[in-house]
Length: 81
Image 1 (tube, helix red, strand yellow):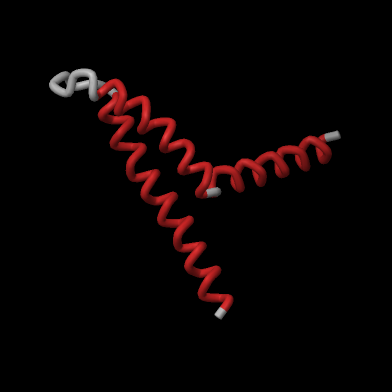
Image 2 (cartoon, rainbow, N blue to C red):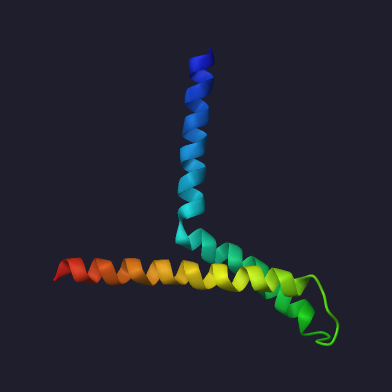
């Protein structure tokens, strides 16, 4: 019974690792942080809000995820020639 439970946990961790390292998930997650933050910040720029922190987290995540996607595309095109 414990081996079955252990195998399920290993499968769960491997699926979670694939989801977390997927750059497309990073783009979606960062956009979920950036868009609402910008909407709230642009209402009144002069007030310091927690959305500035969310924006500071979301932008680098977005750039890193897009960089990974574009690197994968370039490597795929390089391998074809």
